[in-house]
Image (cartoon, rainbow, N blue to C red; front, top):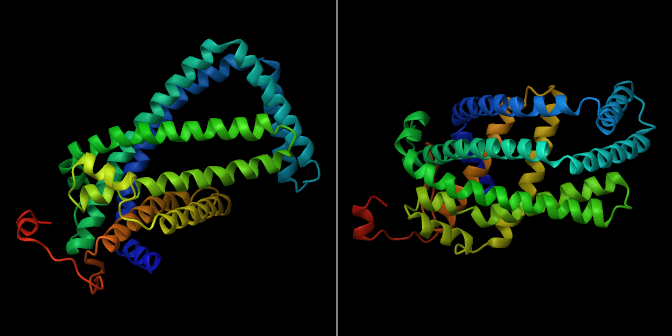
Length: 319
């Protein structure tokens, strides 16, 4: 039922997709420019390094054969790529200064990008909440400006937590699958890496699922919203994790299919729609857990079986 409500709320808020798309495109364009300014000089310095040239050559040969329909030598190509990549890592380990500076620059760029996308996510969540609560069409930009302080605080806290969690997961999985179990077939290693990463992202999403709705819909303070979300106060942790784990697979499949089938053009719609899909679930799930009424479209209101009574104080606060 919650999946059904999520889809209905998503359809009702589809117009937000284009506004969020424009916002994300602006952020990504600026971020890409900064990243290219860091990556291109770094790659120029690698020109002439034997391991780097061999790695580029391995990728080039593999893609050419794949485009020609020849898939017989994939195992050999993967083995060559792995060997050349190991050689490149060894070279970079012997010349750490340039790598460290470039990596630090990229990390700062990505953190800034995630911070600004977090502002957009908060604004999109506020717009969705207004549509669900009053069926009001709140303007995205005005909502972003109006909630800039709260959104900035949320993003400043959420982005580092998410970044550290993701980085730790990536490092642990790499050491476990590509170092400790180095003898496994490369395709199996990649499969297990992607599988466990999706599960770990599902765990993260399960713990933060109620954070944004508790701030916006529940009007809780930052500490209260975090505690409510991280302690899984609303219950239903298993079903929430199940939703996120399956949704991550679905989102990855849809985006990959869109990328391959339309040469990347479909990502213009599927990427912001993926953000909105998860946001709509968070708000629908929060409202259902807390027995709150909400619109799924202008003619349909979802009402809990036993409606929560609003106290006089909550009514006067507009809750």
